[in-house]
Structure formats: C-alpha cells, structure tokens
Length: 164
Image 1 (cartoon, one colour):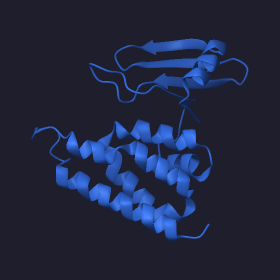
Image 2: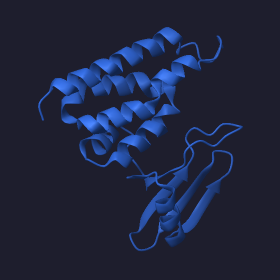
Image 3: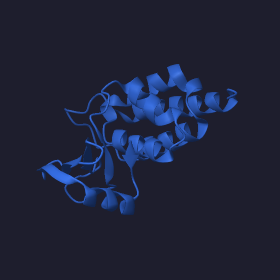
C-alpha cells in the first residue's frame, strides 16, 4: 500500500503516467498502465518551509479508520505501518479516533507493526510543538495530547502481553 523508499518510488513513478498535479497541496496522482492502479505521491507533513517525507500509496484507500489500520497493521509490511503513521501524524484531529480504534482492536495487530505505527505518529513531538492558544485549535491542548500519548503507551504494553 505505501512505498517510502525513495529509490523504489522513483523506479515506480518512471513506469507510470502522471494524471494530475496539485502544487498547493504537494500531491501528484499517477496511473500505472500495467496494473491499472492509481497512485498518489504526496508530502503529508509539508508546510511553507519544508516538505517532510514523501509517500507513495495506492488510491483510493478506505476512509474508515479501522479498515486502514487493519490493512496496515495486520500484515508484516513495515512500510505500511510507517507510511500510515507519517500520513496521520499530519492530522491531529483524527488522533482520538485512531487511539480509540487501537484500544478496541490492539490484539489483532502485529506487535512490530503497532510499534512502528505509534513511533511514526509522533505524538511525543506534537506535544512539544503545540502553538499557543489559538481560536481554531481549542480542541487540541497539551494535556489532551499527553492523554493520547499515555493511552498509546497503554495499548503498546497491552499488545506486548497478548500472545500471538
């Protein structure tokens, strides 16, 4: 689902045809003629100064959080867990739903995949980088992110003690 290695991305992109390019959102859509799949290349953490890591993934993807977690965390493909963590690290508004889904289904996920996903979600870094009080982001406070970090650590410990 995700390709995070730069050399693999270049090799795959060279085989595909570009469909659409959105420079404002740093997104490019491609079509692979041999597999008839649509791909999206994007920089989820892009801001005005830096782009951050580049991801390449299939399109369309499930919009349901649980389905995306199942796809990326049940299989032993580290790129999927890393890519999903990087992508969702840019959307703090969905973190509570993500942590809730992890708390409900942690026993079904691969331990290594779960650890990679949580490491790349960057909750710890987000707590230190929260801006001062702003009108738009009243929902996300330092205490709220701290609670999410605590809950994610509990999920990781619970998953460690589940056999399988």
